[in-house]
Length: 118
Image 1 (cartoon, rainbow, N blue to C red):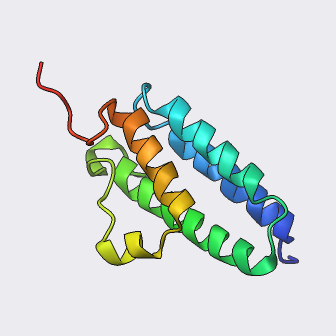
Image 2 (cartoon, rainbow, N blue to C red):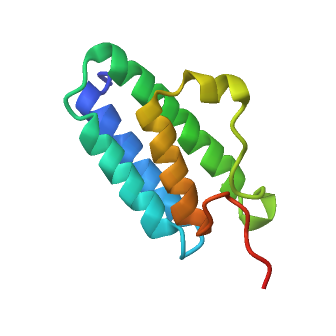
């Protein structure tokens, strides 16, 4: 069988991520789906070097999410999310740090990332 084209690989990854998002809690799924759509749309016409990094990172995300959700059933899953290492944060551009901060606020509802006690 011939190898898939670049467009086919991107489309398959995109659909896989959206399928995995079905396993997310209902309150965060729209946020995750919207973020994925926006990021894939933004990188639609990126240069090849960026495309390689983009696909690698989103593939890692899909694998990590599949492990967290538990492909063999909910009992094999882990808690959702993971902390970024300082080395990874240093590599981010200012725009990416702002996006990450906005995502944290949208996900937690708190600017400092801490959940309020009720």
